[in-house]
Amino acid sequence: MDVFDKCTINMGPLGQYADQTEGYFMFPKLEGDISNKMIFRGKERLVWSLNNYLGLANHPEVRKADADAAARFGMAYPMGARMMSGQSNYHEQLEQELAAFVGREAAYLLNYGYQGMVSVINSMVDRKDVIVYDSEAHACIIDGMRLHFGKRFVYPHNNIENLEIQLRRAKKMTDETGGGILVITEGVYGMSGDLGKLKEIVALKEKYPFRLLVDDAHGFGTMGPTGAGTDEYFGVQKDVDLYFGTFAKSMAGIGGFIAGEKKVIKYLMYNMRSQIFAKSLPMPMVLGALKRLDMIRTQPEHRIKLWNIVNALQSGLKEAGLDIGNTESPVTPVMLNGTVGEATQITYDLRENYNIFCSIVSYPVVPKGIILLRLIPTAVHTLEDVNYTIKAFKEVKEKLDNKIYSEQMAEI
Ligand SMILES: Cc1ncc(COP(=O)(O)O)c(C=O)c1O
Image (spheres, rainbow, N blue to C red):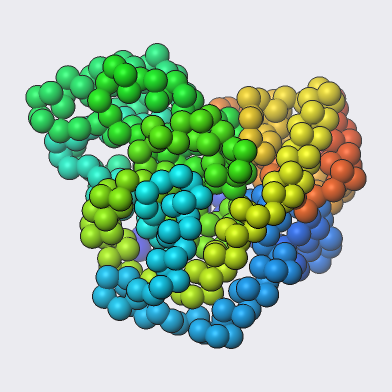
């Protein structure tokens, strides 16, 4: 057997559909300036798929800051990993400003959120420790735990009663091993838009000794009175021991950060292998992030605009009889009942006939019979976009209920 045999025999859970989906459902190309309308297959479409929550991706001030930094430093500087030769005053300044913004003593940059999270988890636990985590944890959390030699216990998504059961088990185990407990949740769940129950989780600290790590990829910049995140929204910043944010969403860039107590961040600086053995963030990313952070802090209008669109979209969809689940964040899922084939027809109809581009998820990512269309409202959407989309979704649901899509499939 050749290790390459799998490339033709079994392409994996997503790759198995490559022939039917590539270029349309998977790896689609969105072209033109990042905004509410972009080009897909040569035609302008209304796009609800980008995590450009605050509309900063193509903001003239941001574009200028990025371009100025690239002109001044190029894309290479600084060379090497932070620890070896890739340190700069600007990296440190960004860390200090991020820490202050999220109300922590210190922060450290991560040169991709994903790898960073893997290393945060890997560095914080050893074989004596136990991880307790939410069943809907993002892939980067799962991959971080794959490196963990000790035990891990999962609780069903946001089920606090069950979390307590897992904490009891973890406590019993760590009493024997002499280790500690790390609980991991997300602030905003990126598919369903519901929030990690941070208040309830934090309250359990009265009964069980644990540290709490929150992945707030979707909450940073969008949630809380100043946009500092989901823990600010719930007023529990003090009790979230490690706060993780990415620059890939509200910040419309690349990279991320981890924030917490000074001594813990110092420990992470010297132990996160994905940062010690990888190149430092280039200067346009760092100066660009400083600019974006400054705009988040000083220009609340972007967040206000975002939430105006979120509120109009979510209330309009609900009034139109569509099921948007339990979202409390900008992430807006629309749940329909149907088969994978119908999901394909709906996506095609939305893209080709309504010129609406949104992400779609069906079985096996969500339970059989559920179709999840995910809308990401942003500050660059308009109320006209919202009204148009609500009308389109209402029509699509009617067609689905009247079996139009399943009839179309029968004809193919
Ligand atoms: C919840 C969550 N955590 C982590 C990440 C990874 O962040 P990055 O894109 O910066 O690698 C993402 C996706 O971007 C995410 O949605």
